[in-house]
Length: 347
Ligand code: GLY
Image 1: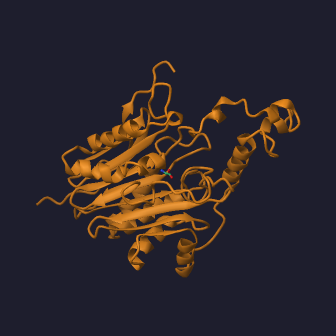
Image 2: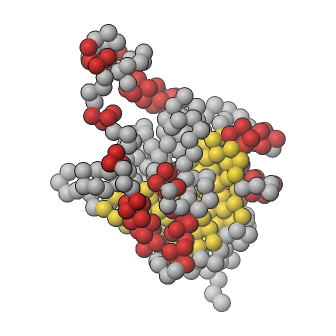
Image 3: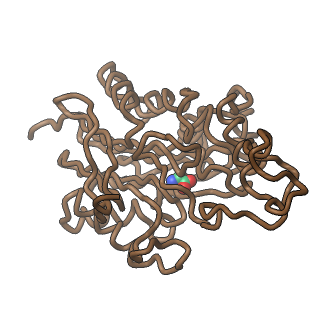
């Protein structure tokens, strides 16, 4: 039998992570340790606004992190959610898998577990993420005491001017759907559902995966998305392959996205077909007007990543224009995602 070569697929922000993970594997590290080592480079990056240190905080200005790992050979998973003050949550998730009989620890309990293991605690806000949060607060409403940038500079009526108390006239703020940023585009606007996902196949033909995120920016404290939920933000079945998701977690949770992608591959879909199937399912089940654009399509993005046991890989986004990372014998690189909906031309 041919020994399969190492394959990895990741979200756009996982370029360095896959390279570091591949080095770890080459030097003999177990697959999940190698993946954690790779993703720690993203969790350490202060400029990555959607993961780890420097991730955008919740509405109270506190960073809450979620992460999960899943190990194909044992079909076991470990996950943590709503963790404050610990940046390496993917390692913490791996400790849940290895040291406990449980799968998911949340909030205070997860922090207590991290303290017991000696994980360092720190503020995860950077100057950049604090400024983004303050700007978000200031722009959020004209009915609170926070002055927007325009008001501070005297370019807009102040707290006692008519516009301020008449309510926001900014149409962007009338939408309940956050901007399009997610892990498939470099973060430009400080608003994100971004996440890092990594699915991998090692030289022994075994699959595993990992997802880590600070979740939806400015979320209500305690909100947890798809990333740490096995079957939603990630799933691995050693007989079939591995998959993960980034983007609007609520949409992925409601269709068990990663599990659906692996199930579709098991039924014969290629990885790209499996990802597109999940996206069609999300689009079909998204019924609320507030979540749809003028063409009745989801106004948010989700990207799926899938890796089959034979080494085939594929990724697809709800909308055109997103990228993912692959690693194979030609090295690590970004490639365009397949997509469900074309970007409107001439816009
Ligand atoms: N996909 C990340 C989140 O929604 O939290």
